[in-house]
Image (cartoon, rainbow, N blue to C red; front, top):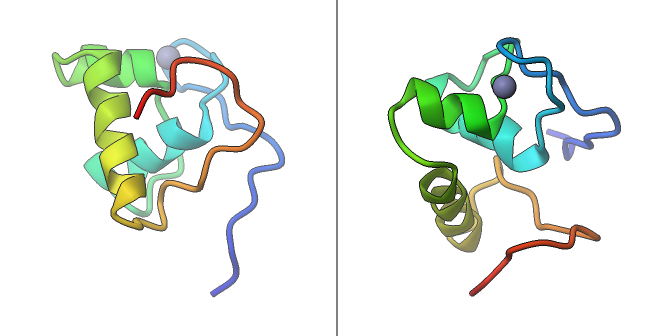
Length: 82
Ligand SMILES: [Zn+2]
């Protein structure tokens, strides 16, 4: 099994926004590993009646536990607080 490399972000099937690597991981983790259409984090949050912060926190916890669906962050600035 080769490492996945996201050279082009998929587009959200709801709003058309680029889906981040975390967003892709969340789709696979929450919906189905075999999903071929993705929702961005914002639309996922709306769909599951939760918040983006909650979903990203979940992604961070999965990453911290070594889940392969959530690659290490690189070169992304933003609100990444430990
Ligand atoms: Zn969206």
